[in-house]
Image 1 (cartoon, rainbow, N blue to C red):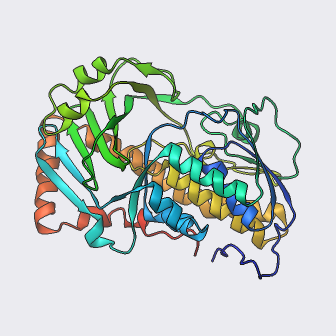
Image 2: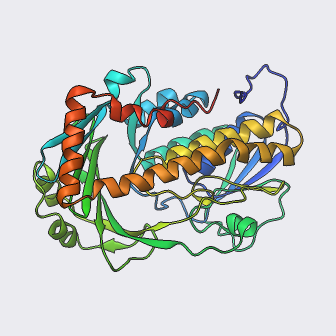
Length: 382
């Protein structure tokens, strides 16, 4: 069992008074900072961007990560900043229903929610500062500081990962993705996936009059592996012109969009060396087809802090952290990769798969959801 954060009257744990340096002030780094600070650590975060840093668009937070936010005391603030998600609809590119995953029915006490990434970062940053975390913005790290405990939450191109594992060359998956936020007042709490030949589009409401769009296309050429590349929305509309249902209306509202290539990375073989450790995308970059990237980072952060607080032997605690997290993250990365293939079927394979899913939707509607129950039912705090 992983211990919970200590109450104010509890005896101090192994983290009490310990200095920790975190590279990266995104969701994983800030969650780790807060979890460590709540256990008495003296935490500094080094973030290369400034106050107006690029933080992407919408993300989905499933109950496995939501339990961590609850344990950190963020339930009320998180719910105020996010939007409920009661299920997922899989539809063909014309808009006809293929499968409905009913979260509200099958897990009524385990909320799924969606949120703009910027709002979650702001929420975590505010909480971390309130617990005494020193967050240094505009602090680019070119070489690793000689800190007694250094945590790399520095993303896909992590310096800490490279120091632990050496250089890596990721490979292009043959897919690229557009991401956009559009104005939208439809509060229906559903994630909708429209599946076509070699492409699919995902959309969900974020609350506050916003909707998130992610559109993925198979292609022979590739784009740079970064969030900040922009593209003409006309290119997005052209590639998804044959889609029906609400998709044309959504695409008409896209004023600006980012475009990035989807690359496969290996889960890191080595997550720690007794002084340094990695979490989130630095340890296990994943494709976005199971909506677990941010969730895994949040899980990592809690587990890392709990292991360090439970054992004064830092090397042993970091080893325990890797033992607990690596198998689960490897399995999630593999499941996300498999979903990418399933969304883009064509011809007889698509007909057979959609027919089977529609039949299952009628006869055993919970079956598809239960295939992934191991993801959502996991409680990192217990």
